Length: 266
Length: 91
Image (cartoon, rainbow over the protein chains, first blue to last red):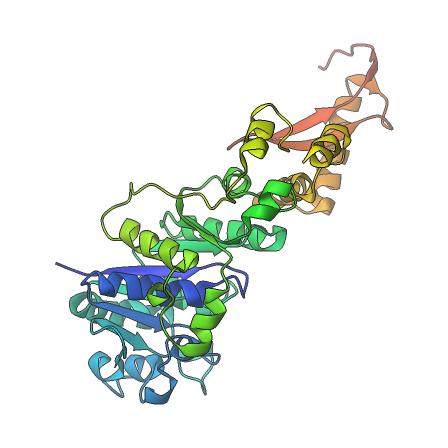
């Protein structure tokens, strides 16, 4: 059976694409799938450090495209998970080193060798985005509950639709206590505005920083709420689309619950 | 607990959440249509000139708006009509 190519995009930078790519990739691999995550941010590579593999980089995606090495040679195996691989971006080229047609051409090999290929899309909607999206079968759009991020997500969703891809939304870095106080967009607000299906909701979680510091996959951090959410997102992408989406929430006291029931909870 | 309750009962101030949602919805209407203010202005002028051929309208009161439902955007053009113009037969 042919593998699937999923692009993780957002439009805006700094909303958690790389963390999401690494975490979902790790979760799929721990579920027994053969997974490769590809850093498409040519010139500004980061996925290698997030995954703790920066010391093992030999070849990169530009080398694969230019035929300097085989896909298999460029794929770095994760230290922790046997079926997880990384293809890093080149640090010395720019986005024009690769074209969307190049990506379509090499996508056959990706599909043949891996169950899942996750493309970590760079910020922006220019060449880097075009490259990352070119061969994708599915797309996950990430936004945080902030005005600027949601607006950029809307733009990217429009561009993906134009490419006949129906993306799914991941709302990242939700702070339930702020939502409850009425000082942050809720995931429902974001869904209302973007009118798109959700693939998952991820709470803001200190463990993300700790995981990036150490290069240990987030989903292996004990008790990480974000890690657990990413694990469930991976399951939804891996043949369980109807797995219920858990809403991040603060544990309410009895009286507050009563209060919000009778309308004072705003 | 009681103070919280009283605060909630008497505060009329909405959180920034509602503001954010409204601003977003407004911004996205224009983003999605990809129309510039210049284009809207130009269209308004043309609509006014067409309507003015048939009605006397109050040009200061007219309003051009884009309204959005879930997946439908509507162009709303509101203008008070002062009177109909005398009918002319067009040969």
